[in-house]
Image (cartoon, rainbow, N blue to C red; front, side):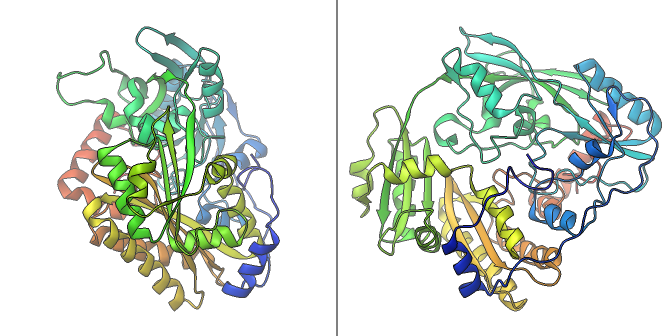
Length: 497
């Protein structure tokens, strides 16, 4: 992966360039600046320490649009002073001990795919900042065919995990958009949800055991498939984003590899599609994958050659494990079958969106995503409120946007909404997006939805997360932080309000 983009550069298709110019007034690339690393602070002798400019640059930022725009302006305010690459759990404990002794902030790094500022740690008040790169913790430690579990070190990347499991006939079934670069530890630390989570479950549901290094010592959690022995402490680490400790090993539920059969469906409206996919989630046949695009997303994708025309309606791609056939139930909601072509096209391009985001930024457009989840009864209001907040804020800034949305995951009780926003970049695109993001976050909170379904909290969502869990919840998390990270060196400024 290139330092400040997702994969290799791609060219925007001509229809996309035409749309940017005609609909949004995007006039061309904005001048950038060569990024400059700040002068590093001296660091103590961490295991596997690398203070080269190359290593610091590679660990300087995450992959949110704000991260990338800041880097393109030439600023790298969150670049580490060095990179430590421990090779074992004990060496991770050593890193945390040394950091506490010398007042060095520690930021765990997996695939560096955070899109919510999860790597933008606070530097003020610390003698330095070190990136803890988990890439040397990259082994499959044990595969238990009887229990159908696999124990991995946390630095194993998604494709490597699937390669190792496929050799034994198994899969995790976890394929988020960050799959090509992200690590298993990152999936767990952010409560990742893969594109087939309706069939295989979210990543936190796959974690049956874990090992973590903390400032108070080692946590070894999970010794049975289920337990009534008090609160489940694994949940403190799942979604903790490196603020409480560093995940070093994960024992994961695995399943025999099976083919997912995809089909495309055209619905007359987004509302009709919502009713249909709710019926699948609640009454079956339960899908492994559901992606229901609204009218705008369907039309834009069709016009730019990246989707299927649904005759002015909405496109759904539905995937099932095995021989389940949802045709009868979907047809009862007015769906027209489109065959397996839309599904095959979606599978072929499902990891492509971040590459296009970088190309859009190169062209002078602002392009970003945000997501949420709500119960079914609140979902239509949440959809309308977030869409309107984004459109109103960016219209007011003189940069009218295209706002697209799709349902990306479904459950018996509700679903997630994934919004994509494209507009012309303003003179200060970081401030432009912060204003739009704040308006969308306020709309999410007011509608009773969650601030994040699968991107996590990071730095960007902290104020909304505090509102969501309330003062007692905030106090409880700070108490956990004091217990597990008494020196307060782990990813300061991330997650905790």
